[in-house]
Image (cartoon, rainbow, N blue to C red):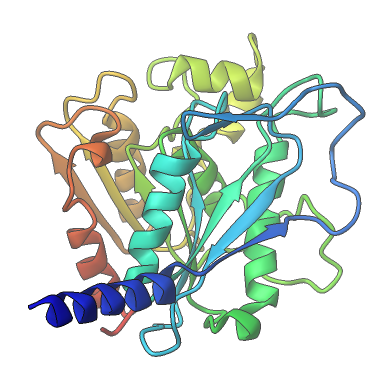
Length: 298
């Protein structure tokens, strides 16, 4: 019996190591765009980052024996005030890697007038750079460059949907003209809209400021930015979400559907905001969607 237990422990260790190998990469090799000298100090406590000014990408690469070739860039939430890095980032990355999907957790810059000339652009620049970095290093990481998606939670869902609807204009250096379009988008209890009657007020204030002009509100209301080139989407939300109204997801679903974009949505009757922390099987329908959409095959 003791020998059997030893074998099981060893096998579990090998499997865990195979799907959880991690590497941290600076998002930019040169100057960080849209940044200025500042005294803001980055901190990490209770699984969350605050004051992020130097963005990074943390890679979880599955073992070659289980790799599917698909990849996701993960944008944790936090109201554009913090980055919920551990709970929505690392935990999700490990779950993807266990399914053979390369996962890259994005520690993106938090919008701050003290650190950026234009704070509303910083997070999107980092998301674009993350997609560019993964696509340009696809061969190195065993990734199919045509199966690179983005997933976001809450305000990170706003960032992910912004990357999925604003990819035609590069906000970063991109002399190689690498495609910045995610091949698919996954949105989990996302903030989508910046409109007064729908937005999460704190997220809008952090990103756009106290009194943004209507044209800026419209530009970052991603339900208004959907077109025929928007990537396919999987959306999930809880109907009883008191923090981010489920109508964010419903309005985005409707616009995707009207534009002929493949979209699947799962709305749970209960769960509230952040339901992934209490719902262990929330990713099961997501993985089934990825199979049906031929993003993964096993």
